[in-house]
Amino acid sequence: MNIILLGPPGAGKGTQSAGLVERHGMKQLSTGDMLRAAVSAKTPVGLEAKAVMDRGELVSDEIVSKLIDDNLAAMDAGTGAIFDGYPRTAAQGEQLDGILAKHGRSLDHVIELAVDVEALVERITGRYSCGNCGALYHDTANPPAKDGVCDACGSTEFKRRPDDTEETVRNRMEVYRSETAPILPGYEARGIVTRVDGMAGIDEVAGAIDAILA
Image (cartoon, rainbow, N blue to C red; front, side):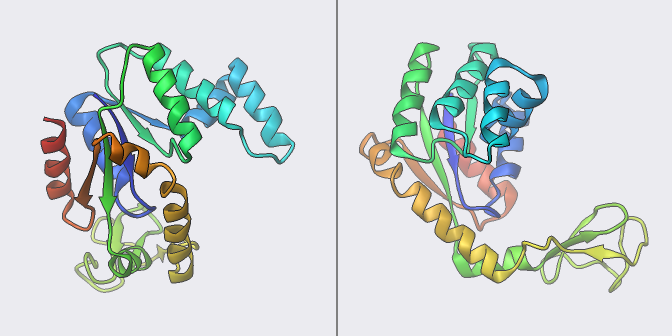
């Protein structure tokens, strides 16, 4: 089973991908992770990507496609792939079809975690963590039992991500919409797009995804 998992930052793609890896033995192919791994390992495509990034340029579709190709080649044929952050354009979508075919695979599902913008803003801007142990909290959904004291370690130091602001969240949504808009029509025409309520509970979202893959 090969799927594309779509959703804006904060929709829960990372959480759901991790669940799919655990429940179904799938492998998450995140372009960012693959790029960092290739650069660190100094593979041919990693060295090529590093040279581009060192010049302050964006990594090309060709390099990203090579990353996908290399990772699929290294995977067992029976292991499903979760594509995260790729494709971002219609051209990349066409390239992905070719790469999958080369490895005897095809794209089975495109699953979008649909979100409510206002609820997502509240979800992201309200989250914070313990500065000592990293335990996660939320202003309204998951505050510590005792105000200002971490449940896990008793620390009184907390921190928020500097980019978890309303302005940043709304900008991320606009970027996501502009990036996904070009790729969805083609997949919808093939009848492989399914939308799941990304604002539901983690287990509920996981169940909905499992039902699609069943």
